[in-house]
Image (cartoon, rainbow, N blue to C red; front, top):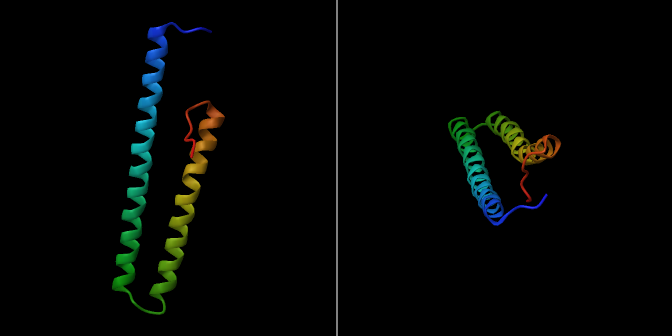
Amino acid sequence: MLLDKEQAATAAAWRDNCGQNRQFLELFYDLAYVAVIAQAAHHLAEHVSFRGFPEFALVFSLIWIAWVNGPSTSRFMAARTGGLASSS
């Protein structure tokens, strides 16, 4: 399927906009995780004990696993459904 110049320009602008939108969403995603980790650290600061640290370690590890697996799941679902996926 060949595109005329106007369609090609529209497609290029759409791809560029999707890249900027994806970058914003990735930054927002990271910011949300920073806020969640800050809340967990605040809880640890209030409960400094031999019990508080393992609780923090458990919560932090679950947060970290979710943070690491989030983009992978997003790329998998985007590839599976034919949507745009992050190239990183």
